[in-house]
Length: 253
Image (cartoon, rainbow, N blue to C red; front, side):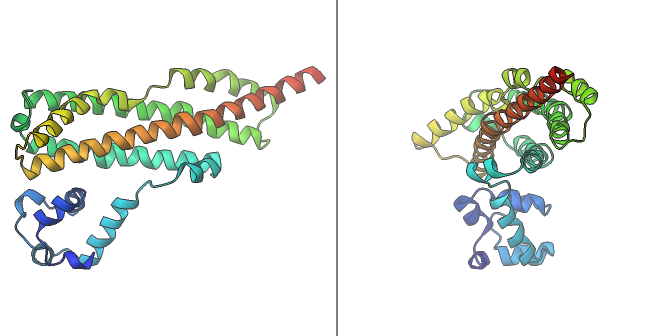
């Protein structure tokens, strides 16, 4: 990354839009420093280049696990990975995208009212935060308790009470995929792509906004896939084994 020192902020962002998020992390509005070279910017803002470099690498690697790795992790570690993703979505990605929406005017590429995009994203953010809180407090906590039960930390009466509280099988059926709520982003993004394909020049600010929203949508889709294809099948299997254990004990009595 050291070869970027003599590049301008604009040059780097056109190569990799995620660099705008790195500057945001350091409290720098990239759009106000597009013509600045990185060496100049770091000096002016008193940013340690090594820290900037580390944050950039962290942004690239955050939450990057293969499905094989995740399938082989103990379920408690899998839940920690999902919680870390929730934290990134709620505390980092959503506030950042919201700040980009506030700074931009989508009239350049869309007939939609800019205030409508802000409203729709605000509604999505509220629903998503509620979804995350409920998921962690109901499903994740219950799965952890089932792991404890499987390790012998519950007597049969406590196990019966535990299993009667939540049905993981039912939760899996009802589990909503938050990426479906981002259809409006896909629709506006299609207009953005159409504008590019027609040869229309759009601002770098819109390039960053729509690239970030597209990346966010992709990460949400991957997150949902991990929950639906790895977490829930394993949790259901664990739940069934506990019911079997409970039933066997009851038959002996």
